[in-house]
Length: 122
Image 1 (cartoon, rainbow, N blue to C red):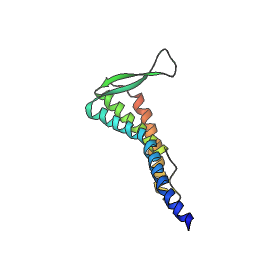
Image 2: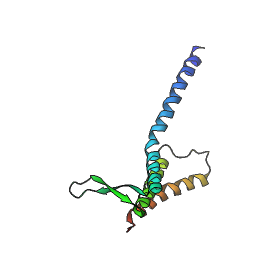
Image 3: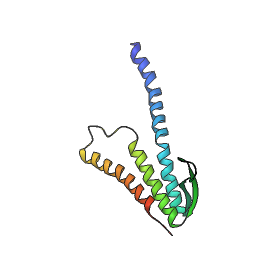
Image 4: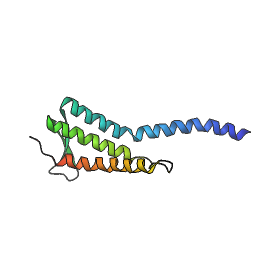
C-alpha cells in the first residue's frame, strides 16, 4: 500500500515541473508575438540588421511607420513558427485535418516571415 502513496506525492511535483517547462519553452515565442503587436500598435520598433564588419553579429536599427508594421508582422510570424515548432507533434488521436492545418500554419508563417524581410518601404 505504500507504493501508491509515493506516487501520489511524486505526481504533483512532476506536474508542476512539466507546467514550468511548458511555460518557459513558450515564453520566447510569446514575447516575440507581444513585441510584434507593440510595433504595430505604436508604429515604432527595433529591426535586427546584420553587421557589416563582424560575421554572425547584428545590431538593432530603429524603425517607424510602415517599416515598424512590417517588423511587427515578421516578429508575429516568427513567434507563431516558434510556438508551433516546439513540443511534440499532435497525437495520433487528432484528426488528419488538424495535423495538415497545423503544418500549413507552421510552415506558412515561416514563408510569410521571409516575404516580410524582402519588402521595401519608404
